[in-house]
Image (cartoon, rainbow, N blue to C red; front, side, top):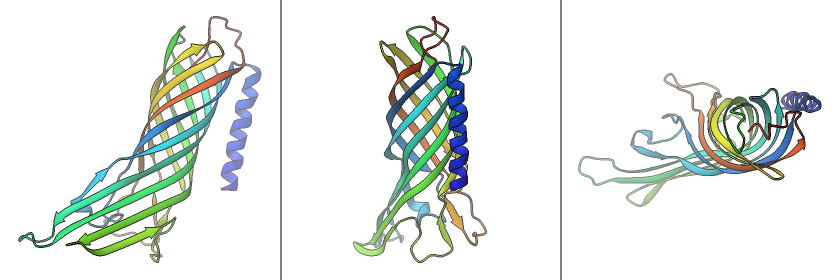
Amino acid sequence: MVKKIRILVLVFILCGSLSSYSQVYFGGRVGLNMSTLSIQPELVDYNKVSEFVPKLNVNIAALAYFELGPYIALQPEFIYNRKGLKSSVESHLDANNDSLLTGEWNYSFDYLEFPLMIKLSLNSDGFDPFIEFGAYYGYMFNAHYTAEAYVNNEQVLDEDYGLGFGDDKNKSLNQNEYGYKIGIGGALALSKGVAFFSIRYSQGLTDVVNYQVKPEDYRATYNRVFQLTLGYAFELRGSNNKKKIYYY
């Protein structure tokens, strides 16, 4: 973790060195996540009869912005991101409908993420649309898993875990995550800064679960998040291009 933080600090220092030659903005944003998991039978009991529902969560970010040219910019970010999934089940266990299984599973993962985004804009006055893409490193600093199941109103499962899986030593949650983000959005120049919005898709490329001994038919589980965000940034350094107001 320390080595990764050092690398990230070097990236921010490199970005800071660009400020001598470019237009620079600093700001923040907040938004909603619609998160889910590429869930597999190994992670949730009764998977075949479960209904998986994306969870609404939040994200909060600080960001800096450095122009690299008329239509391209580099944007390092620092994000608090909550991800997860909600799963529920209601199913009869026998042909006579005598046994009714009901239950609910909830996964909530709290991440600190460090994306490095490339933004391409049309360089238009007034409203400026953009596309963005980049990679990120995320660190899961907190997790909460709960599961309850009942058969004919009699409880058969009651679990409440943090970063581990209770007494199950064969599996644990992976606190490190790598992935990519892509999105579209637009910005509006204001008298003292820029207001902007974006719609993003974030895909984890690291398995959420660590197995000591993986099941034979195991398939990895990944975080998937759709995000809608609103933000504001103010100018720290102006551009030599007077026709250019911003590059969002």
